[in-house]
Image (cartoon, rainbow, N blue to C red):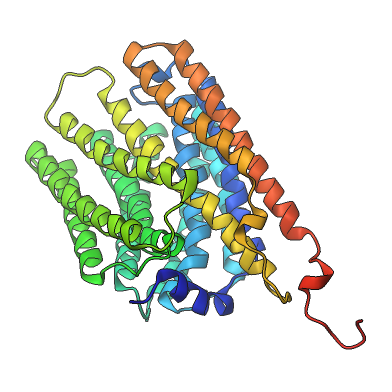
Length: 436
């Protein structure tokens, strides 16, 4: 059986983008990571009782989703999907344009949310739509005619379809804030949560997992049929979620959506368990502890969604669902994988022109990641406890702890960039005429 690491390394060198392209997305994501926790700190008074509406809790949510998770997904997919699909990137200038458009757009949108200033929010939303449509263009060009890894490709196409619904529902929600005719807020919100959280971001996470988890565990590639089946059940679940948002029998459709989603997650986790079991590398460190926690949170988010669908009278249940979906699953998984991706890509870029390529561990720093690990988990636990007790003081403490962890993670990234920029030792460069 072919290993994911071998498949990646065998063709990655010829399809590596310039380091400045993916690393600028990753760097922006980590800056927004710090800002997201600070925004949550600013909105700590409202967070335990947050029920929607403009303010810093909503800004923090979108800094985490658009600023960290989607930003990282764009950078990772621009580099990983060309290797998985054996298709080059359409145009290297387009990712740079996307970055210059998307980063200030996220800043404008979230600032508009935090300050409750609808015109700034609307301008940011329109710019985000434009940036993500350009990203979709790159993704379509990459997926068309793709060869190999059909499960990854299927997840990519499904994520693109979900992106269209997520953007349309987002514009509908913005329309409600600026008094423009649009889809009703409850239906638009239900569509946006399902198709942005489980759809676009979720399907990208599940699809890229089939590259990343086997690559880092040195295990065989996942079974293509099961991976495709997982994607199919996820799509069915999202279709049911759309029917629940727009139809006349929402509870029945919601339960059907959760049932299909549960099957999709079960199939996915079976594949991931096989990768961990069959991989040649078992000492995976803190990053995969976070990955496993994220997988548990993914399953727990479906239980919370079922409780919401059944009308369980539990205070703060909707906010708990959001914490599980965004914070404990998507954010935790994203940060866990990013701390593996960054040194790996740095080592591949540094290998150019060297006789002996550096190991990924050359670019990693243990202490900042250990600090982030402790702070991230403590922050999530603190937010859950703040929600259970209704304590804004606990929410503020949790947000401050999360911000400390985010700063430590950013320090890890800055050290990595400094080491990547350092000149290669003389003994690692190939000899040229006149040397010696």
